[in-house]
Length: 483
Image 1 (cartoon, rainbow, N blue to C red):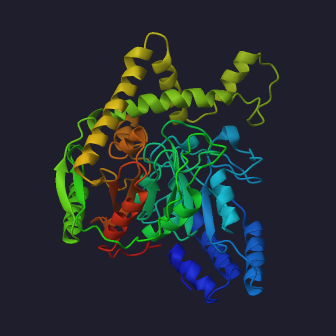
Image 2: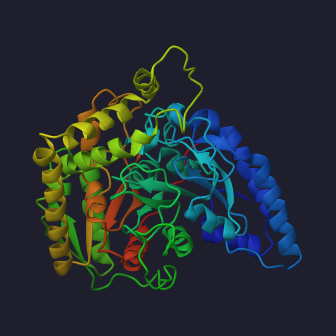
Image 3: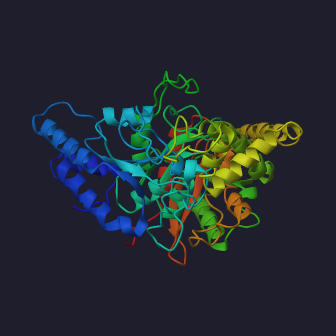
């Protein structure tokens, strides 16, 4: 059996007895052994535990005992989401040997449904980056062309799903970190509404804008996993007490009569010609399915990058203050250092991007600059939310390219932070406004690299967003990963 199947297909095959869980997990582990020296998606593997769990689930199935709804599905977890008994490194030297004493709520929910956590996957250090090049353990590589970046910061999640090393993955999205690798690796990635999925057990970077989100090969897989991981959590007071929604129900309901706004500021300067053409083509295909696509303006997008990096860096500088090598850390050897010099020395182990953002965050929060930068950034954020609210009175969804350019070569932009920051211009709006957004694979560029399309919806409209994404998915017939 091919590993290139959707999550829903996997469940059908196991349920019908066409394949055992142990057989599928063993094939997945073989695939990981084959691929890892090429793509480097994983930081930590949990092979023996995965096989033992697979055998246990097979025995339950054979004995007709009750099993969880995921039936041993192999899932990878971004390595900034806590897993009990398994390393959670955040791709940082500071946490290279940290083993979490508890599971994040999303991990607990997956385990309750008999998912198999096959390993922890690579990311930009502390989720700060757009390419997965800022990892202490080395960069992940795009399975479509291993000379190219896979996007970030959830690069390992995107790569592991795209390269058939797991069926599903969980990442985190602070400014596009689920949608960027989804676009660059030709998979589907959803950033849920802020508060829909618990952040308990997610190592904090920027609390007010980050969300855990799923990455999968098909939109229907995203609906399946959202049914499991969404909902109120008593450990996370930012989660909302909403009635449970069945995201799988009516997924094929179509989009006839829906109105979609093509965001003009996300199609302007800096957009690659092929990406712009793909977005217009996606708009045409949605119109063919019965939707009406109209241009729409969001002026605040032009200020979003500055506002986002001001707010995110401010929150990061506060969150990362806890890493002093006393409560968490690595074997540094303290002899000969007084306290301040010791803390200063060990914190120099942070990589360049984490250091850059902590310094920027400390600066914008400092006494003389707080009002000039941080307060203004929050005002831009409020203006953006107001414009988004107005936009959704005119249209049902927003449409844009996920990323303004196709994937680029590893090392090509690493020394140009500003250029890397500007790549987030289409994705950060959803985070600042707290609304859901999804990236759907749409086409392959002339150079053989994926291009994704982004759809955005109003808060807690994931069900209709997934229906629209599913409709768009039905218009594409994309090849599988070439390696």
